[in-house]
Length: 209
Image 1 (tube, one colour):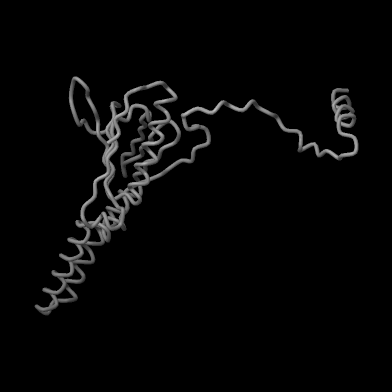
Image 2: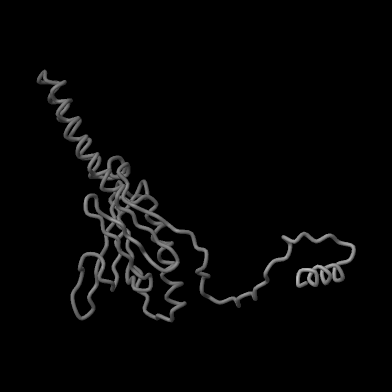
C-alpha cells in the first residue's frame, strides 16, 4: 500500500516525465561554511623511508657507493677483481636487502584525525597519535637531498608514542622518518590536517615549525 501511494504521488507530481526509481535520493541539509576544512572524506596519505632515495638521493648512499667503487678498483688493480666483486656483492647485498625489508615493513599514514605507525620486522608494533596532539613538524635536508626533495621528517607530540625528546614540565616525544620522498608536500599536508582538527576540537595551541 505504501509503495502504491508513493508511486501515485510521484505520478501526480511529475506528469509527463518518466522517473527512474534510482533518481530518488536522500537529501541532507548543507552544512554552513566555516574556516575549518571539512574532515570527512580526506584521502589517506602514506609515507615511509625509501631505499632508492637512501642509495641514490642522499649523501650517505653516495658515500657507500663511492666506497664500494674504490674497493672494487683497488681489488682489480691488485689482481683480485672477482674475489673483491664477490665479497662486495655479498656484503652490499645483505645490507641493502636488510635496509629494504626494514623500510618496507615500516609504514606511516595519516587520515583526518590520526597519525598511524606500523614498524618492526620480527616484532611488529602499531601505534597512533591524535593529530591535535602533534606539536611540531620539521623537514631537514642534506645538500644532496635538496636536489631530489628527499628529506627527513621529524614529528614531535605530547603523545607517549615515539622517542622521548624533552622531559618535564612539558614532555614531548619525537618520531623521525628518514629518506622520505616528497617530504615537503607530506609536511604541508600534515600541517593542514593538524590545523583543521585543532580548530574543529577548539584546541588553540599550534606549534608547527
